[in-house]
Length: 420
Image 1 (cartoon, rainbow, N blue to C red):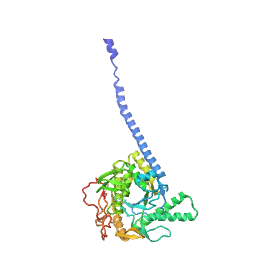
Image 2 (spheres, rainbow, N blue to C red; image 1 turned 30 degrees about the horizontal axis):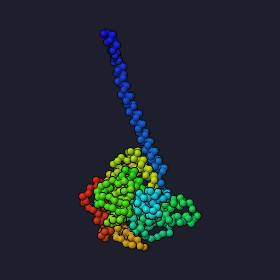
Image 3 (cartoon, rainbow, N blue to C red; image 1 turned 45 degrees about the vertical axis):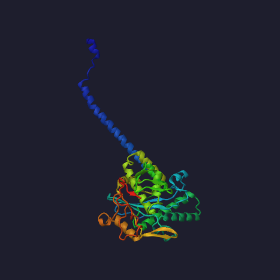
Image 4 (cartoon, one colour; image 1 turned 180 degrees about the vertical axis):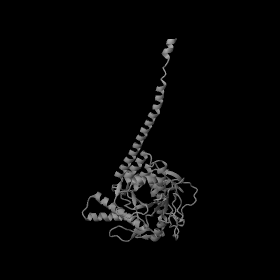
């Protein structure tokens, strides 16, 4: 019995050994946690830096803004230009299978019109940003095109300047197609920016150019973009076929959504609303799905940017990505600049605009008085809305981009503006 007890009895460690063991365990755990945390910080920081360097080194850049006037007081004006081109940023034709999915037709259609022109004003004080959509058919003075004077649709400035530059280079013996495309596009960007700057009367600090496939790739990178429609629509030309209400669109659907104009009450002016709604939905999705904190999602977004986007050289994109997070969640107020009526020029439909009224409108909205004088805010549609901000003189019936929009609709967009 005693032998059995001695065999099965486990000697107890001394009190000194037990105390020492208890003292060392927390330290070991603490060191392990600190080491793990440090490794995670290095990994996340290194990943973010790698992604930024990858983006900065791969995205298309332009010198179109070199020497341009900058905004005062730390404010930033960013011009978003969407090209209706069926070619990529290097001038290569988009693959036929891509064109088929986009319902975009031949790669020779569309030219280099800037069918989307939006000036995004980001105040230095962290206040709500404002996005001004410029209807593509506004009849304005085109600037920055050598040998050209006079008015035309604002969307044409880019293409006309590009063609002029390529013609001049060809006359000088330049035959390299890539050089002609590169230099032609730089001339187009400069002309488009200078025309917008002259028309609105404000500086342009940065710009981002997106080709036709950009909407498609952006929506796919975000795993769909939420939008809201006041009523069901169907259009075979753009491929739009959507029910009424809030819904999430994939890449192919998103392009159809922003391109549709046939069957809409006000055609191109309603398409401008679609562009605003898409951007509002995209910015909400950026924040809601944690794109900025998820390396996989961020990589998809960066890959999309590398395919389709060109920005001005020297723009700190990492700083803007951080800022863009703060612009989501209804912190951008969208509005469409008013037109006075409609007309014809050389057989084409145009929007008649009052240049001075436009400049006053912009000055009221983003000038020093904008945050201090409530009388200048007008009916701007509220957070994430798309209303016009009011005018000193009402334009003819049906010509104001925001006149006749659905008011007080029963459809709830869940923070996304509902559009026709």
